[in-house]
Structures are given as structure tokens and as C-alpha cells.
Length: 218
Image (cartoon, rainbow, N blue to C red; front, side, top):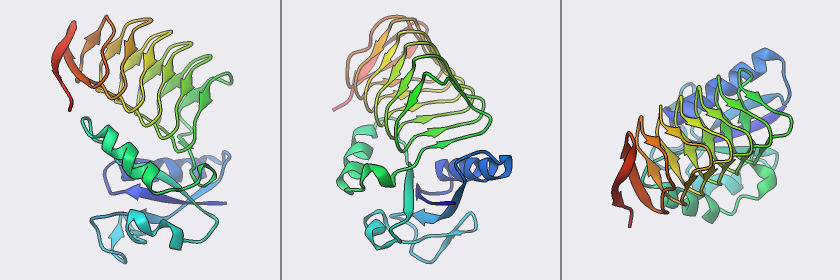
């Protein structure tokens, strides 16, 4: 049994908790158990979804040495801040755990980094790489040879086609589609329902069908 502490609250953290419980009920490995939450806004001792708040993010060293962690905090234009906050904690790679819902399908030749959350209904096909601390939400399809960078987010029902490159700290909105071979730059944001047919520069927000540049991110 691996003890897991969720960094976050009752929104994205609730999805991770449900996946941990579904994984336990399925009888699949690894066997995970949620010990509680770390949350910078909710006081220690309070409850989130019937699990205790064990402290703030910075309190992780006070937890038992066998505790593992997964982050469930996302913000479309704040992915760089998230990356800086989490890496600044200094949690070793071996203390992060990935949670793959039992209803997700991940090809044997695909690689999923540490600290990732893979939701139900996700299809990750052959030779895909998903970078550490990324979240892939329900119904996402990722085509062969595609790459999702570290600390990135792919929203529900998005379609990332073959040979695409999603940069580090990128945010792909729900129901969006990325054309084969297109690159999404580091820190870029793709709006909900967008159809991206050409490369997107780093730190740029695009939206629409076809997607066009809305503005850049400082």
C-alpha cells in the first residue's frame, strides 16, 4: 500500500482522490491510499472530501518518510507559477507518484513521467511521452509519437494528433484539436474548443477555429 498526499483542494484534488479510490476497487497495481491533503489555504486539521488537511505545501518534510505526493493545482495562465512553486518545494522525484485511472488506456510503448494524473477514458497511443507532473483529463486522445512536456495540462476531450509536440507548462483547453505535427510552445495556452493547424509560439494564447493569436503571456 502506497500512502499518497494530494497537493491541492476539492476540485482537481477531488478527481485525483476518486481515481485513487477507483484504482483500489479495481484491484490493479499499484495499490494507493489517500492519506490527506496539503493545502495553502485550508487550515491544518480541517477536512477536504473526508480527508484531513495535513498542512501547507511547505509542510511536506514533516510527513512520514513513506508518504508520496501528487499535485492537483492547475491554472491556464499560471502554469509557470505552478512549476516554480512545486519545484521550489524540493520534493525528490522518488517521492512523487503518478495516478493512472483504471479506465485509461496507455500503450506499453508510451512513457509517463512522475507525478502525472491520467483520467478515465484517456487513450495514450504508441510511443507517446508524457512529461512529469502533467495532467491528462477525461476523454483525451494522444496520437502516436506525440510529446507532452513537463508540468502541462490537457483538458477533457482534447485531441492531440500524431507527432505533435506540446511544450513544457502548456495548457490545452477542453475539446480542442491539435493537427498532426504541430508544436505548441512552452507556456502557451490553447483555448477551449480551438482547432490548431499551425505552430504556436511560446507564452502565447490562441483560440478559435482555426486558432489565432489572442495575446502573449508576460
